[in-house]
Image (cartoon, rainbow, N blue to C red; front, side):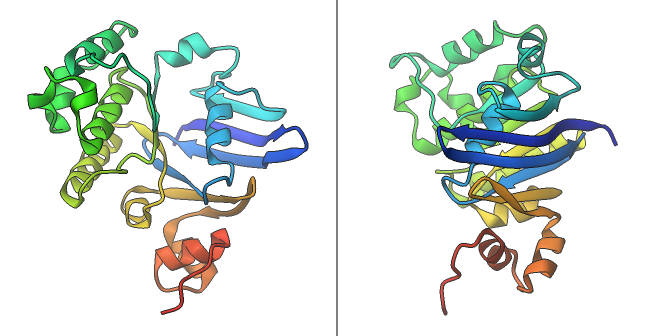
Length: 241
């Protein structure tokens, strides 16, 4: 299986504070990879360095065999990114935002089809600011998929979604994975990680504390449930029952 993302010895510090400390990981084609950790663990910095939006202090990074710093223009056409918070013109409509995004790419996906897939077909003439939190979150996923990417980065993708909407998104992602798309995600929902991820990496204070499958995490922790295993491995306290 082809390696889509390769990271070796990634290090990034802010002044004297190390944010990412010698992180190495690899993501295979057509898999879902989860980068996990508490807030402030170094997840966002790791992703920003992988995408080339921040320059690593040291280490080697490649996406689709390209250097994210030197080959950003090429990568831009082949990588989708869903951010937690995005600033748009306050009155812009969903259709206008999608059409503007389509114009940036050579081989874009059909945005109307994506909106239908993600339950936004009846919202295309609505202003983005009028959408509920869950609708906005689904729109951000649509925008990330408009490039027709080979690999997509999803940050807390189902935050604000109700249970049915979350399950619907999981199903779509499973279909995209089966079509060969590589998915790199972060999530604080362990049921989501358990349902979607082929491999996970848990980081704590910028360092990897676990790397492997869900089952390996459960075995290593000695816990019965993955959520408890994550808490134990990440060094977050498990609430006493």
